[in-house]
Length: 329
Image: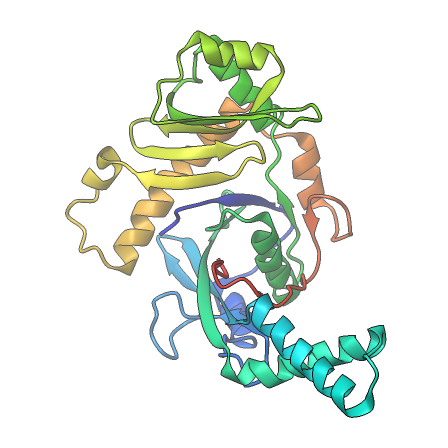
């Protein structure tokens, strides 16, 4: 539970109880794609039980589960079907289809193929900390996070969200930590980072399983390359990869964290208690390490829902996934 994190701030005016959340999400349950449906999404019971609750509370922490199913329709297969249809028209009429007709042929070919396409499913954990006013999504994709956040703001009346914003950008902080070889209190620098130049060449240097306390890295930063990813540990309890966009990837709960829950049964409640218990302590310390939360981020969440950068106001559309190698989440 929670391998990645994208964090949103919840506006202080939002008040709702769990039964209202349950009722709202029950209006949009996840259903598998129909024969000619490209993509389907909805809410599923977090415990995985059929007809179970859509919103669970464990120790006062709310857990939701967002699910997506999409048809796997490779672009090469679709293109070949369109070519076959175009060739048939040319053979029967002696003319090549025009641009408009080719577009119609593509839609027709897609409808032909969708009933035979394989499907893939993906799910995302959604954690709402009503006391600390954080919404945390288990994804490393900002586009997917915004889709789920938009679905929530549509379903839950009055909910207004803004991406977590700190006084010091993650990139500036990572550059400082690497240059000085001094991590903030409670944190330590691990053995992975990526540096990218800001010039036209966009040169990239990556270090993996490599000590980062070397002059070479300091020279790269002095020459204008900035960190886009940096592996860190927190309090010997969590390891993670911090990105320039303040996303958390490769989140791992270390032995010190899991040992404190060694007597738990390993079920859903125990997993939630472990994850939320550790992360509720980690998130404020990460914010402090980045100079504290900015007034801009807090203000964006507190404002009425409007279409401004950083705020989430409505559902986001998602195209048909034609890449068989990617996953919905």
